[in-house]
Image: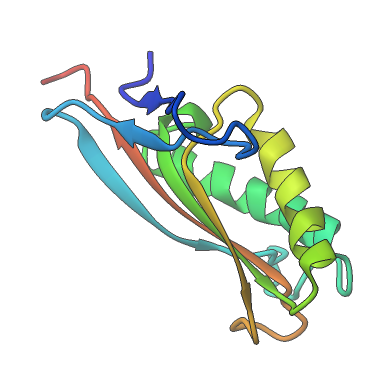
Length: 137
């Protein structure tokens, strides 16, 4: 069972494809994840030139980091999706993959176009914060 509560804001536009806020209980352990990058295990960039493909690989990387921290996708409380492009269509392409990957867990998110990301040929990166309540507590 997730510790994260997504908050809808009925007075705000319903055009946003995510909750407007999220909370976690005071006894939650916060997990701050490094930006999930579209890297293959050998360190090369996956899906060169493909915004959707890189977004999918970032989600795969995110799942791996969450598992290592004892969490899962539904424990994420917030994301920031970075897309190396000045074209809104490229941002939307990446966002649609991320949104679909999260399914019903539509956490508060920020989608940003940036000039460049850290790895050769990198187009997408996903930053996230998760919250879990450990059973042993």
